[in-house]
Image 1 (cartoon, one colour):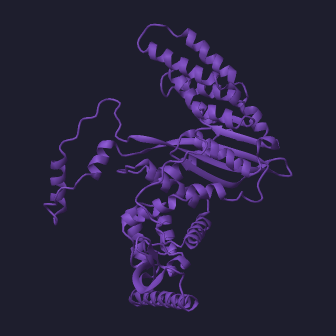
Image 2 (cartoon, rainbow, N blue to C red):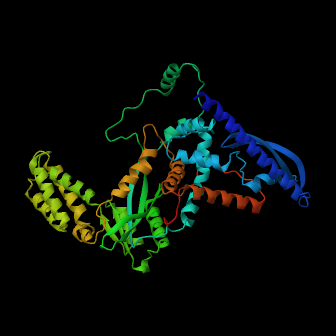
Image 3 (tube, rainbow, N blue to C red):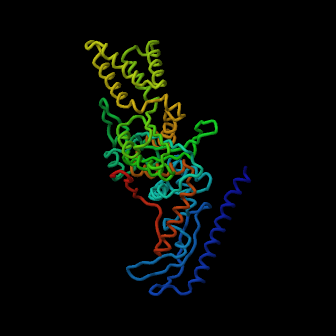
Length: 472
């Protein structure tokens, strides 16, 4: 153990020396090939900088080319190698942000420090994520369609609210910080902070501290029919999530479906499974007019339990038996019988009496919800075609992609900043991270070489929420 502990820093030191050697060789090569610089510019000699690498900080020297007063200058070696001005290699940036898609920024620092012997600070990792986040939209648009796809496309869509900061919280966060009167004692600092903030207002009925903002997630995959006639899969599963309006998510699904060859004119089968959200229903009808739209059967079953609760005592055998009977109707393709049963029981309920008003109102709402969606609840026909009748894939994605990273205790997000990390997490979950990083590296390096300008890749400003498909 002691040997390994002493060996690790030596190996990292050797790595830094190799990187320094590489940078020196490339600088000398540039100087040999550019004995004369372009007219109107002049070399001002070597200037040093620190760059954060996988092996630690490396100081190197490179030529600075001055263009003239008011026009500034540039570092040709950094442009040639695709090194941003923010002082971190792309590999460090990739590892730090990839880790940030899984754990908090503070935990990123801990993990990187453990394995690399150093780490960018929390604020810097967040700025790295915001910088990479500005390239996610282009990546999703340009990413190629999966190969060896199936013949039936399944799209599942759901939403999840995550905690966001209120205006008052943002005002406190951005305001001038009070002087730390107890820099040593943590418990006294806490007491002073609570006294400074004052007592919390008591919540009124219905108040929620979460201040949740909705994000929409799309899961897409295909099914391939086997020799036995079964639809096997899922194949090439991909996820996409955004805090933009729901129509944006449906429009992205349309774009990806077209990319996979499931266009309107292809006559290929597309099935979309949702929880019956009214907005999604409207957007799907507009954007996917030929798709089979299905309501998740487990979501419908929850409505049956609510209806049964208006008729029978909670936990009673009568309630369980009634719900099971209605579920049988659903699986047999007789959803209309379920609605008729609820309507008939509604007519038999007394109009007066303790709690009768609420029971009648709830039954009426449930009947209305189901009756409007009868054409999306033919579960018998769907099972005969071996299609989906539940949204388990997207329910799992809601938990894994969104909740595990964005809905933990104490979190308060700004939507635009959460959007960058959310889309980066989708890229990581999709297994496209390395290709995405290569895409960003090649694009930024190419742009720098064409413009002759050094660039920053991290930023403090988040990109606005995407608008693709929102206003069409």
